[in-house]
Length: 259
Image 1 (cartoon, rainbow, N blue to C red):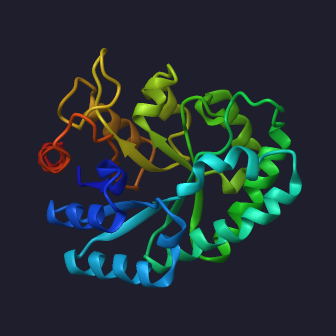
Image 2: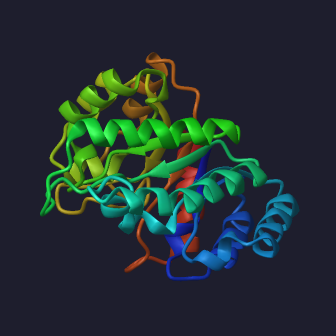
């Protein structure tokens, strides 16, 4: 298995420094997690492209820094906020294309909100954004996220039915674990819809570990994804507290190359 890594593994290290460390660790695929509006400006994108080219890396996907706003600004009941945020998300789509990426990752809306968010509104606005992404040659992909509407298999089934060809899924192992989902049931249900994977390991005690440090059957995950026709990438996404991240990522890369 050839894996990449997300710059989010090094948070709160600055994004460009994190991408450079990923290149130094001999990863050839990466996901860029943006952390500030200034990082969407052209000089910064040029810097990321220079780092990418220096190491011969492919930036597969990007992650918006504004995920925390999506509940109210994209899917909330005050429509002006949706129209106000569209230029920001269109800029993400432009940036993804400029970096040679394929996917923009969406968290979506929280599961529990003061004002309930109807599925119909969620699907309509997702479709609008997905169509906008297509105009820039990239794909808007829904991530399964604990405590969000997308943690639910049933919700994602309804979404798949409603948005049809726009339904693409980023499958995050740790988020499925945290939501109490059976990872392999999730994969079996959405095997033809998963376009991108956020990979981590786990044990019964810890839900997010570097690949190779836990007991999760990554080989079985790969097998089930391949059986479903998966041709996408595996991006390591772990959280840095308690880890020597650079060392652990190198160790995980070597471990995964043997699978």
